[in-house]
Length: 382
Image 1 (spheres, rainbow, N blue to C red):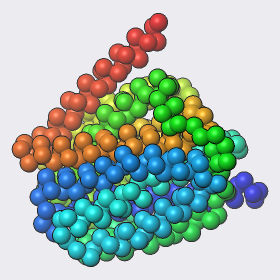
Image 2: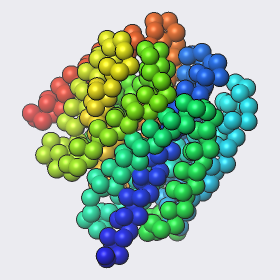
Image 3: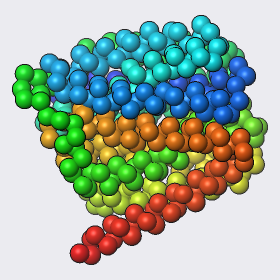
Image 4: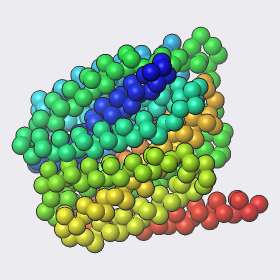
């Protein structure tokens, strides 16, 4: 086995382990907050405060990575700091304490994903190897851990924090095995992050991504609570997330071919249409078991948005701003959007119920698909 093949497998292992952490935190922290007695609006505040920090953290760590001697070193710092702050979670249930811990954890953890993508995609662009199987390993890791964490959470909800610490530490160690990818501004003239916004096509795609991710932000925060309300257990919730994660595999197997054929624009439009259908179905299904098969629709929403934007940025953004491009996209698409989806969704859920807000999200996603589809068709006709 050649050196490049060995490195490729290290990336596969890294993504499998890294995404396990997301399955634990994103799925079961809202359940934990619900378990210790917080209302939906309070959970919305707690889950949206972290993303507020993203506004500062994402550009900061993106610029730091582009200007560092190596992006890998920055990634390792972020993992170590995330491990430390995760250990602080179960020490108190006080509302203001949790605000502080979630804010601190998000400051470090939120940039690990886009910086990992920047390292991976930049390395792969020099080898001609595909990102799809590597990202698919992340999907499988997420799916497997959803079930494992669901089993632990059903028996002792506080175990999710120990589990997350173990996973993040393993990911930290694997980074030592990855090839070093340097920051291209290190020792050179600094380039402003604002140069990214001179690319009009990128700005339009980021806007579309932001709007659909807002509906996903509501889903990630309130679906676990709604799922339990309609009869689902923590173990069944883990199975639901297992199904949604595994549903990403078909797209990832053919992602490069699909994007080459239809382009990033229409991939995002397609994801918007599927999101509209999915939220509509969730709003009408009254039983947790009936929701499970429709979790398969997830494989045509989030992963399409994520993969399409990550690869587009890697191809279109100057090498000096690749990490910054990934973090800014993450800030807009999975930071600010999660704030809106979580915070606004919490207040609307208290007023109208989670079920009705899913219906509103369906209408919003459908309108987004129509409006941007019209914009893209009009531009193509010129």
